[in-house]
Length: 214
Image (cartoon, rainbow, N blue to C red; front, side, top):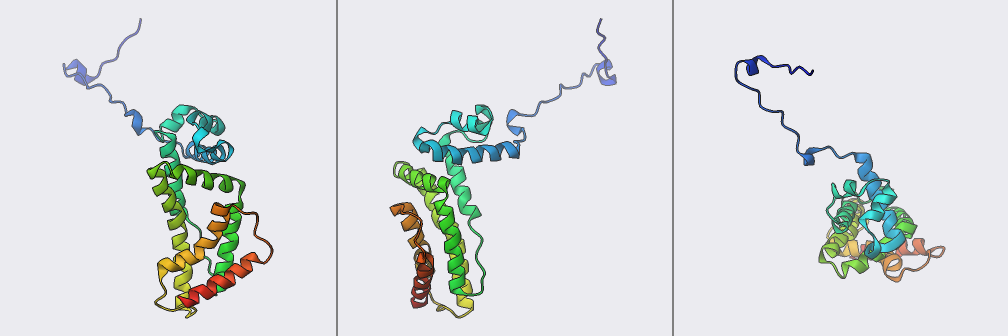
């Protein structure tokens, strides 16, 4: 026979209120699971594209249940929007070689490798196609591609100004277009092969000359 223990308050006719459960949404989300899902999204995008990507496929690739995905994002659109927006925040570290041409050369080497990565080379054009159909996607992608480079480009321009390598009144928006435009045109729009030998060096010299002329 089970005996129920009573507290002094209950014995006095004042039963204690039942213990409240923490709401389901208050559960702590494991960061390792979240990162596994994020990695799976990029792999799934590269493998099947945005249109064919599904929450089921993402969960299977991440080794988690669908519930784990839905607890973090309510749809695949919101999942991808979150990841694309995060790209803008992370950005790239600003080069600091001590010269304008050195900074540009390093930036172009890093960006060129990143854009040629098998995942990036599949994902970025696919998301651009989706952006033509989704205003939300278009806004997030623009933020990621433009603002992600803006911080780096602005850092290069400001450092060059401080060293007297370019004019103090150089247009920052125009400088961003001059710096970031060529590689994205080649890798994302034209989707050309790996730049030929000497291409990045020539691009560096041309960009530096253009910035000095602003």
